[in-house]
Image (spheres, rainbow, N blue to C red):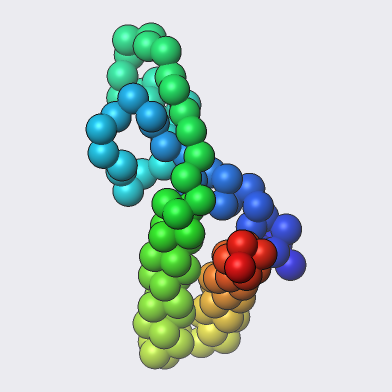
Length: 106
């Protein structure tokens, strides 16, 4: 339920790009990170790329599903299995929400 309600916010964050850069980055444009990395105040030209948001959501949810299998393969007990299923549900909600956005475009 948490992942489903956060899909829109996650997709909006993952699709943020800096239009002043000539190439795209694996890290979405964030005001917080750019203030830490660049102490010089510059005018930010931030745009949104739905393609980048879909790509990063696919990569992140695939990594989370891989972590699910690693956690299920370990023999650590009930709590690790419970966290693995919670992690897989969160990743699946991101994938489902992302595919809903794709099917809306078709």
